[in-house]
Image 1 (cartoon, one colour):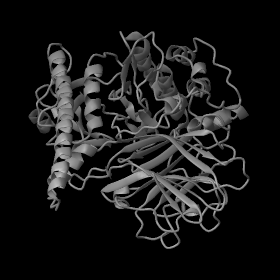
Image 2: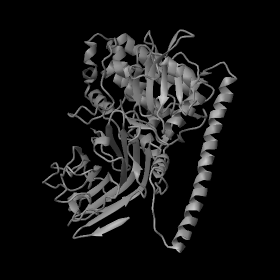
Image 3: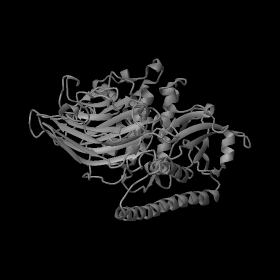
Image 4: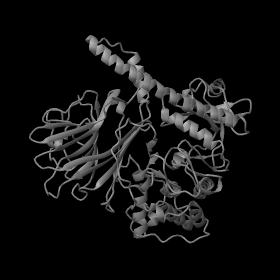
Length: 593
């Protein structure tokens, strides 16, 4: 912790090690997420300021002189808008500086400037001394930086609590960065308290550090006693580190051996050689690429020996989280059999590559039809897709031998076969749970816009959090609007809140997708939207089970009577604790797409 005293005050808290943002050798840009809890206490004063920010800056960046007050400890009068800056930040600004701020306190995302590129109002006084849980995601594929936040005690019905901004960080920031927090006060004061912090990255920080060290020769002049002391420390550290690495490698090897032993005995998915899959995809040629996600790309292939088109998911090299998802997907997904689940045909982990082979879906993903360039869907197909997705979820939650919580239900994971039958895919984040147990802490994962509010706050995945995601997809199907649309600059309101407002005013028909051109069943589309709102209820205790939702969608049960105004989320949040360890690489979060 650094503290600099000027007329006013600045405080920093930064991670002790540098963090890789992109890899100059491979060109890979890192996905990352960070989650932190903090308090801004205005101490009952009408005059307070100036705020707190999470920032990324070049390694070696220090607190600039005269950077207190509205500069938030990151800029000063000569650098506030300089093209030489290399700083990106998310700020919770509690004081209006007329020279560069909007005319209200705000949460903003700043690109190399003290002025926010995008922002939304907030009021520090109304939320004074409350714990704020913030959640920042960077999706390297879509180049989208997003932030969402919740208040534990002082949520207001009409508060906007999310923001997003498209930015290619590899063009703004260096390969290695310092990450941390900066807070500042001016002549007015307030108290800033950081309660907890977690950071996750798709690039393996240790591996990149090792690679960098191998390419640099260090020439150090030391006294004899210093050499002995430092050599002892280094040797001790290397022994400890090597043991730790070997343990991780043994665990991973055991997992892969277990996959081989378990699956090669059964009649399920088969093991492919790397040579077979390279041949099937024309050596993973760019023209075969179907799409790209946070942990790898998907390619179209063809198995000549069985005359079958396939889709091959290739996990990015160096992505530890991607490898974990590979193991999870093979171990869980290979055991599931249902007409509405994508079929896993095989796997491969030869030559340092991790590859998953699926049946090819000629009609692509649901989101491509709703928001992309694929052909629009008729209402009959949309309702069929809604029921198919619900059927897949019912199998996972209630009909298989164990409860499977998917944790990443979204329109881009809903695939469509040649007859537009639903095939739910991407089980890399799935978790097995006992049917009798309630929510379990799994670590936060999924996609912003589809995550239940209690899951964001507590990290506890459940059937109810899956049902919430299903509700969001149901609303996307009916309205043709994204859960969160970063390109819509006219409104920062999320889809659930937007539809709920129309429902409360009695204007639900205004939410219907215009591409349907009034060619739909009015009762069915009303039912789908109300069921979607019910599933996406902010209070998890008031959501239906997926079986109950299906009964409503099939008109076997009456539609629920929901409140006219969307309720404020209410849930218990465990007492936060300060995290002092290394950044974990255990979560997978993306911006809704």
